Image 1 (spheres, rainbow, N blue to C red):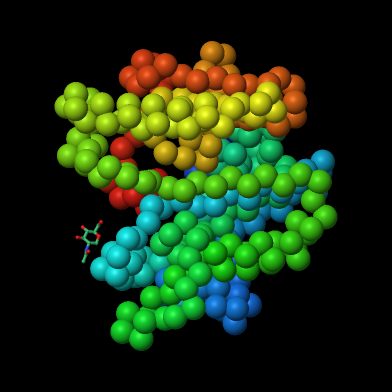
Image 2 (image 1 turned 60 degrees about the vertical axis):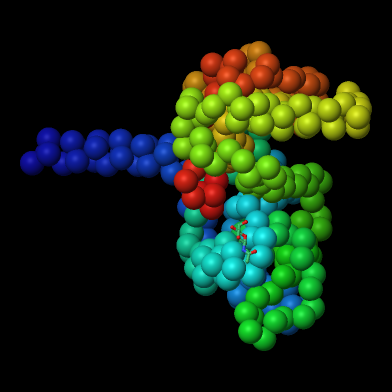
Length: 291
Ligand SMILES: *[C@@H]1O[C@H](CO)[C@@H](O)[C@H](O)[C@H]1NC(C)=O
């Protein structure tokens, strides 16, 4: 019996560790009910929401605000579809979500930001926190109020202590945008992409690097531009900071962001074009809301 008891607690410990590694820390949802009176609502008129993990120790006055991605809806048909999902309604959102990668509260997984206040702002307006349309079409009852959601959530967080922050970082993840809309046929297996479609992907990279160059890159600006076919590398543990994570030279994304933020080292690196980088974790999402 005694042995059995010991074994049981051993395997429970193993389970707990595995669980933590894979899923991160679960954080409760907060609905911003007061936003509704200001017309700051999701597509379906429900209140906006976020998840907040409180900072501790030396991170108690630092805030990291991450905006959830999830693409856009571009017309009434697709916005009506979205309205019935968690990307259009807080009624459909899970009550808890796992925080991992840059949102993890564990130093081994997130060495530089683990003890900050960390927020994941849920995305439910369909246009990346930009809409501000007063009129609500009585037929569709769709609300296009993303800019108001952004403001209402910020006001709420300021009142919860962000107003006394020393450090505030915003991470805007605009989600999956495919302006050319031309490469869906190969996106389920990137290795099978015809040359013409890979060319389009390379075109995104070229346009991006060109726009960046036009802006100039002062030494105060950090750059970690890898050529990997994947979203959300900062929020995913295996791409943010783990053994085998993507690297530019000897740095993971977590190393580069931390070095740059704490001014240990400037970091400005641009990868060679896809598919040259063997450290990438290329991932395909069937459902853009998973990205
Ligand atoms: C709405 O957008 C979707 C996706 O872009 C498109 O396939 C569809 O044809 C559009 N519908 C209308 C009515 O414009």
